[in-house]
Structures are given as structure tokens and as C-alpha cells.
Amino acid sequence: MEGVQEKLDALVHQGAAAADLEVYHWELRRAGARVYLTVQVDRPGGVTVDDCARANRAIGALLDEADPLPSSYLLEVSSPGLERGLWEPRHYAQAVGKLVHIKLRPEGTQRGRLVRATAEAVTVESDGVEVAIPFARITGARLVYEGEQGRR
Image (cartoon, rainbow, N blue to C red; front, side, top):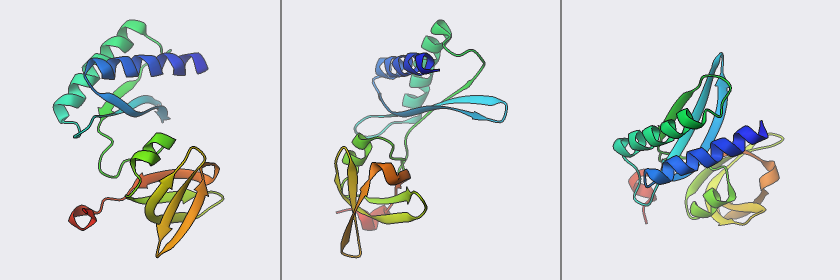
């Protein structure tokens, strides 16, 4: 499966670049009998529905030609959204200063302002207290939309 992941990664990035977009995140998942390839694309200033459609066509054409998956799949291309997930250290670095909700292992959550992000950990401030959280403890994270009150 590792070879498939590498091929998909290259094709997804190539297709997004052809649409003048960058890949924020992608994943291959199974839901029941269906296989989904979900791709989130972004660029400074955000993306439109037309941008997503253009990326879908570009990525889909490359996937059709290369045929890297042994079964049928559904390609979904979208924006990461306002409450975007945070998966990679670069996502956390881009989110410094924003409100985040983090799920932790073995269990628990942390919600607060992301004040620092390194390659090993993030630091969240909540009620005046800063808490360092190693990536090894994070099972999921997302931005929290603040609306007008969150603007500085």
C-alpha cells in the first residue's frame, strides 16, 4: 500500500498544481463498501467552488490515466473550511494565534489559543495558563471559528 500512497500523493499534488492550488491535506478512506479519496485544496485568499471543480478535473484526469487504485473510488475535492483540521506541523504553524480544539490521548481535550508550534509539540494558552502538548498525545485537532469577535 505504501507504493500506492506515494503515487497518489504525487498525482494529487501534480493535479492541484495544474489548477494553481496547493494541497492542504488528502486521505484515502473506506466507508462501508465505498472508497473515498478526499482532497482539500487551498491558496492564499481561499478557494472557490470553481477552483475545487477545476482541481477535481485535473486530479481526476491524472488518476484516470495512471489508475493507481485497484478498486473504484469516489474523488472529493473541497476547501479545508473555516474549522479546518490540523494534521501536520505546518498546519499548526499556520494556525498560531488562532483558537483550536485538540483531542488528546489517552483521553481528554484541550481548547485554547495556539501560541507556539514546533516540530515536536504545540503550546496552547487557556485562561492565562500555557500548556505544552507533544504531537504524540494529539489524536485530532481543528480550528474553532470565532466569527467577528475573533478578529484582531
